[in-house]
Length: 73
Image (cartoon, rainbow, N blue to C red; front, side):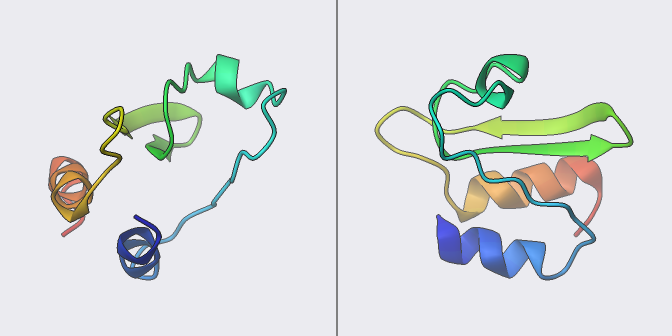
């Protein structure tokens, strides 16, 4: 997933947060069920979200569909 994300994020304005600690309150705040989870915000509002599929993760088609939903591609 990392190469796919790195390629996509290089094209767009972003702030990236990586959650590595199990105790981080962001896990609960955003109800993150699996890694990777990608959440797009406009200000403080979530405008798009893709959660990993258990045992599968996220692929290029997941990111592409999210960008299409956001009309960023």
